[in-house]
Every structure is written in C-alpha cells, then in structure tokens.
Length: 488
Ligand code: HEM
Ligand SMILES: *[C@@H]1O[C@H](CO)[C@@H](O)[C@H](O)[C@H]1NC(C)=O
Ligand SMILES: *[C@@H]1O[C@H](CO)[C@@H](O)[C@H](O)[C@H]1NC(C)=O
Ligand SMILES: *[C@@H]1O[C@H](CO)[C@@H](O)[C@H](O)[C@H]1NC(C)=O
Image 1 (cartoon, rainbow, N blue to C red):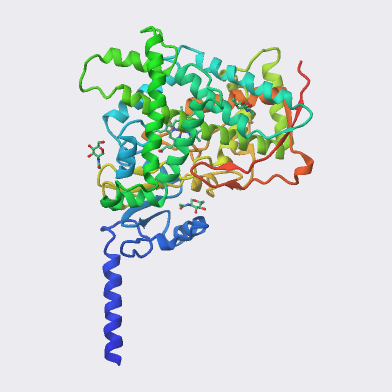
Image 2: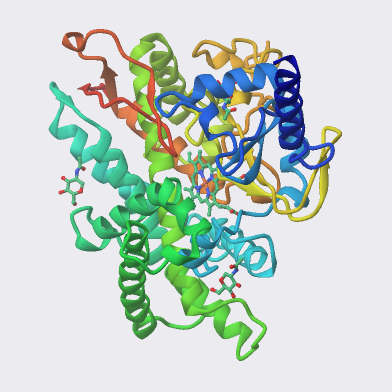
C-alpha cells in the first residue's frame, strides 16, 4: 500500500516536473502548463480579467501563459512596457496561419516586421502629416465633417440624442475623406459592408475557430465558420478594387487628391522596380486597414469624452471658458490653438487615459531570441502588452483612480505629459494614426464645446462609466441633452 502510494507520488512529481520543464530556460514564470490545453483552464470565460489580475499578483509584471501549445508573454507596468515596445526585437506581429491566409501578408496592422511593413508605414506617416496631401488640408477635411455633426446636434437642441452613430459616422467619414477624397454616407453599401466584414473578422480571428484552423490542417477546407472570414476578405477586396479603378481613371499624376492618389504617385515613382513592395493589391488591403484602425478607436474615445464631460459639468465649463477666451472672434479652431489651451489639452489626454480604448494594444511578436527584464524570450513568442496596466499605475499619476485633468497639468497650470501616457502604444509599432487622431479629438471637442452645452439627462439616473469589453472599449450607450450656447 505504502509502496504504491509512494510510486504514485513519484509519478505525479515527475509529471509535474516534466510539465514545468516545457517552459524554455529562463522564460518568464507562469501557471503550470497542461498538455494540449496549456493554461486556458486558468481563465474563466466570463471574467478573465480577474484571473489575469491574480496571475500578475503571483508571477509579477512579466509572466507567461500557454494558449493551447502556444507560449505568450503578458507585459504589465511602465518599466517593462517601455523596455519591450521600444525594441525592434519586439516589433513583429504573430503570423499564425489564419492571419497569414486571410490577410495574404498585405496591409500594415497585422504585417510582420520587415521591408514591406517598414516602407508602407513610412509612406503613411509622410502622407498623413500633410506632406502628401497639402498643408492644412487634413484640418479642412475634419472641419468639413464637423459641419455635419453640428447639423445633427442642432436638430436636437432642447432635447436628447444618442451620439453613438453620429460619432461613428464622423470618424468613418473623416478617414474616407483622407483615403478616397469623398465622404461615404454611412448607409452606403460600401462602408456598411466593410465595417461588417472587419468586425466579423476581428471576432473570428480572436476566437476558437482561428485556433483550430491553425492547429488542424485537415479541417482547413471544411465549411466551418472560418470560411466566412475568407469570404469577407474577398468581398472587401472587391469593393476596394472598384474604388481604386475609379480613382485610377480620374487621377492626374503629381496632383494627388487623397491618400490613394499619393500611393499611385509613389508607384509611378518606383516604376518597374520588381523589388518594390508597393502594389495595387497592397493598396486595397492598406486602405481597408486604415479605415478599420481609425474608426472605432476615435469614435469610442469621443463617446468617453462627452460622457465624462457631462458627468463633470465644472470641467466642461472650464474648457468652455478657455475656448471662448482663446478663440475670441475667430471663426474656427485650428490645431495650433492647442498650444494656447493647456486645460483643454489636459482634458483630452485625461479622457484618453480613462477611455483605455485599446486595452491590450495589438498583439506583438518577438523577431529574434531576446531578453526582457532579465528573462529570455525566444523568437516567435506572442507578446501581449497590457496598456491598461499603465493607466492607473501607482507612482505614475497624481490622481490614478479618478477623472482629473490635473494629471496633465503642472503647478503653473501648464500642460505636461507623463511618460506612462501611452494609449497609442510606443516604439516602432506605435499607432501611425496618432497625429490624425489627436487632430480629430481636438478639433471636434473644441468646436462642439464652443457651440453647445452637454448635460446628462436627469431621468437617466447616474452616469455609468463602466466600459463594455471588446478589442476596443466603448462606454455603455447613453443619451445627451443638447443646449445651444450663446456665441459672441
Ligand atoms: C484615439 C484613437 C486611436 C487609438 C487610441 C489608437 C491606438 C492604437 C494602438 C494601441 C495601436 C497598436 C500599437 C502597437 O501595436 O504597439 C494602434 C495601431 C495602429 N493604428 Fe491606431 N489608434 C487610434 C487611431 C488611429 C487612426 C485614426 C488611424 C488611421 C489613420 C490609426 C491607424 C493605426 C494603424 C495603421 C496601426 C498599426 C501600426 C503598425 O502595425 O505598424 N489609428 N493604434
Ligand atoms: C504565409 O503566406 C504566404 C503566401 O500567402 C506563404 O508564402 C508563407 O509561407 C505563409 N507563411 C506561413 C508561416 O505559413
Ligand atoms: C449617419 O449616416 C447616415 C448615412 O448618411 C445617415 O442616414 C444617418 O442619419 C447618420 N446618423 C447620424 C446620427 O449622423
Ligand atoms: C492588465 O492590467 C489591469 C490593471 O492592472 C488588470 O486589471 C488586468 O487584469 C491586466 N490584464 C492582463 C491580461 O494581464
């Protein structure tokens, strides 16, 4: 009896040791790994957040998890985040078969670290910074769209309105203006279809079917839910191709109207260079990527902003005082006015801090065998940057747990940006739409606050700031009461 118990004990211990040894040498610590399942049993499907919090408490700021048989490293806290994200060795994207097969390695968001990604990224940064589209033209496009928002709000003066569709329309149209030079009304088949396809694919890519696709070659051709993802990509590509063909037939080389024209000019410049990563196939995916990346992020941040400004009327009033003083007599705000509006700047940044729009950033992947905080991480490891962990990190903020613009103001009332502010991530993979997004947030919030007063409808009870979870966070749907402000 004792003999067999001892034997059993030896077996259990050796199995545990065996499993432990599955982690590569000096890999970040984490829970015990089960064969095939990895650590997925550690995570409850209803509320994985609590489990993540627990794992961080046990294992520290850098810990590892096995998603099935795939190792992942979760990064928390400013110090580790900065060390990882600033390095090229962490600037890859996981190239699972599913992602590879659906994106056909095109576009930029999910493209791996390499020449094509680098060239396309540089091109977008140049073009979006007005060098390609003409000075000030980005601001004009944004102001053009704001006029439609104002019209919508004016219709609701004295009553209430749900702003979700309005801000979604606006963000989507601004990107379309930049990319294609036209507003696409939201009920146009074009934009509706694209939005639907991308939303569906983001869900599929993050779900179990993508994992099964990666793991079992035999099922890849069966009519399972992941097939929908390929159909969606095809549909989007078709629409994009039609748009590109239209552009090609009306463009004047050297006089770009928009991003797509700039790209064609760049293709002309590169000529027949067979090494060039620029192609029409790339462009159609690229345009879709930019539209997807720039729509929900911006509109969810705006929704959070107006929610908090209604919940904190004294902060809204102080913004309005500053806006009235700085813009006195001017017809429109310009992006440069932000330099004279430290309070407004602080409010927008504080909104982004609490909005936590992209909580886990976009997954990264190591491009080489590398090190982080003394741990060794092999090439090809999935990296999950927990941007949420910076937002209320002790020691980084004056008021980590409340909505307070003082987090971004010094004793002289000047605007300052703490280093832990990274809603756009940081390093070589940092959001390439940051410039555009910041311009949109500033011009839209300033223009609307100047014209209207926003109040929380009394009959709606207390504002609920708890966000709805997803790839991007969004506030629960709400309504706002609109009043016109007396203008000078
Ligand atoms: C408030 C609005 C926005 C937020 C909070 C935001 C946030 C982010 C974050 C966290 C990432 C991941 C960075 C990383 O992997 O480390 C990202 C990537 C990206 N964003 Fe944004 N974004 C916003 C608006 C935009 C806009 C307007 C555009 C379009 C012009 C855009 C285009 C992109 C692209 C293309 C990437 C992928 C970059 C790459 O992989 O090299 N974003 N964004
Ligand atoms: C990804 O797809 C490309 C072509 O679409 C292929 O050449 C490459 O081998 C694939 N990579 C992986 C890791 O399967
Ligand atoms: C959004 O755009 C669609 C299409 O133009 C329009 O019908 C709808 O009224 C817009 N909604 C708002 C709130 O702006
Ligand atoms: C990210 O950080 C937040 C705040 O520290 C925590 O609640 C959450 O569980 C973390 N998520 C992961 C995946 O570690």
